[in-house]
Length: 78
Image (cartoon, rainbow, N blue to C red; front, side, top):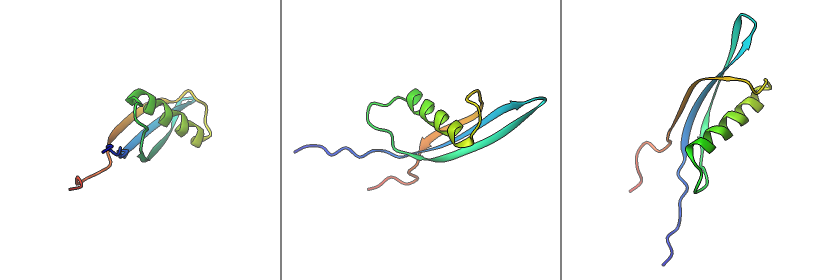
């Protein structure tokens, strides 16, 4: 009997800031992702950072103000 792999979903929140002269422009992104087996937390962070910068239409030199990655499931299945 083969074991079926179920991809776990993770909820993320990522807040970025871009220097705009004397001020900063901020943007917060959030969502749920299901990484493939073998992906590291670093790889997932890089993917989320790059896709968030792309969604913002800003330059890729953002400062990370906040990052959270937690299991998306609140109550485990029985």
